[in-house]
Length: 570
Image (cartoon, rainbow, N blue to C red):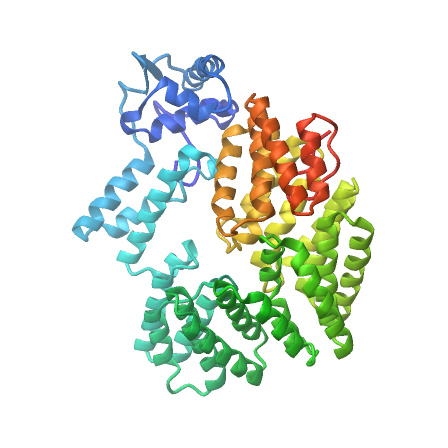
């Protein structure tokens, strides 16, 4: 079960095509993972068919038992003892995951046999079932054990192969390099760690790691670049400890040094930290305007990194309590500032914000005009992140105008370029949200969701920027009848909604709950949620969203909608 699913019974390898009935394979896997290889039949049925009623699930379970017995060629393969179902209760059974766990824990307890235990780990548990809820806990448990064994063996490079963001491993390699007299190796390892962590998400190395880095750079010739990274790391430590004044001071100093050293990425990262700290102090709009005014007078690529760093916070505030109407007023002022300064990048950003505000207000002609202008200006300025975000909004506009094919083309085109930008954690997940919204059937939507999950697995993703994707995924799963998956996505979205004190995302959750309630057969509850959502969207000035919710409540054909919630399949 480690690295793949493979069964040998009485010396005979069971052919893979014997498990074409995936629920039969699932039954074997779940029982093999269960304590004593046994589980109550109702619990099994609920894990395998969470969206069916008890009678239908029980019927399917009986069929799955039959197929397991046929695959193994034994009527004793799965036995019922009362309400318990047992896998091979009278046989000698060997499971690689069990052997690895037992030997691994014994090795850690005795500090012997670590290498032998590691040799038993041939890969993660059941990779083909990566998104099965019943496999999550044992997979994480075994992976954590594997990492602990690697650390006990001092195999730090292997730790990073398995978990690139493991700071302890990075620090151990830095210390190893320093002890060998390789200061540059330690410095490079710290830089590698900083590339994995995300300053624009407020994530940075800890104080112990920074101390090792500062020891490494003490006598290094590239003092300017090293001081920038040290100062930025200190800013992140202060930010995460809640010392916002100190975080702001360090980040501002880091940016000044980064400008002097022509370090574009660090200019953007230090600007992002300044924005996060300002937002935590409820003063981001004022800082944004001050930064905009200052840096549009220096319309260079480096100044563009300062403006790009504001994009995520701008998107966050567009979905805040004041919503797009507050941003619209500010963007109109800033458009004039940028025009007078002759700042192409500033004009592009202002037009993007004005286009987004028009999009949310349902002024679709104005939205297209502003967004097309923003796209042209971003292309002129060479502002890749702004270009991709504008393309995302144009794709959402295509959805509103019932052009899903055009929306999918635009989002797919942007997706190919998003990974090459330093704002990848913000952009990629937003584009997958659009692709889910452009799906023409629930089945296609689920395929896109699963493709996105695989692409995003193990990567840094901005939590606020992932809100739309999780709402769209919850809705898509509900419409496809995958109710358990819909509930999980809805729970994730509800946690993320706590990042906002109010605004459209909370309302979008009511709509998603309504879709789920209808799929569960609770029409009265669903209609009440849709009407409540429609009323709240109206108060926020989001007419298109209001009309969609009313259509859902009245079971009318849905108007096309943006990826903010989910497109209606017709």
